[in-house]
Image (cartoon, rainbow, N blue to C red; front, top):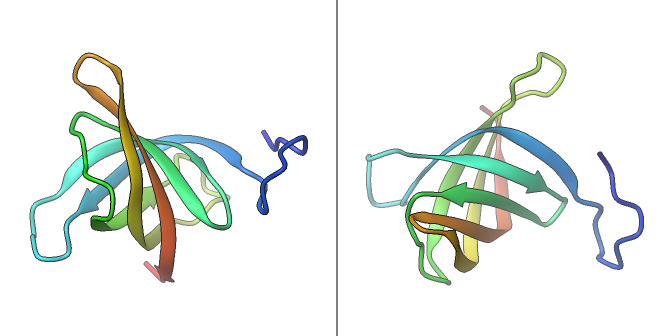
Length: 99
């Protein structure tokens, strides 16, 4: 659902779907859950903490046929523990690539 009460530059859309991510110099994929996305960033949950400033390649695979998958290159802004063994990772989109 869109939240128009935000004072941010872009509106955030709540999205609940699987997200895979990898570090640019690694072929190993990690799985998380996308929480929301905006024109400038992606927020997701991960079972691992990721240090701020780290670059990631993220692939979002929506559960519906109306929303196409997306691959984005992002920089981690922050990672905070939201429950034991689960982290909320905020990122800034640096580029988008067709899947």
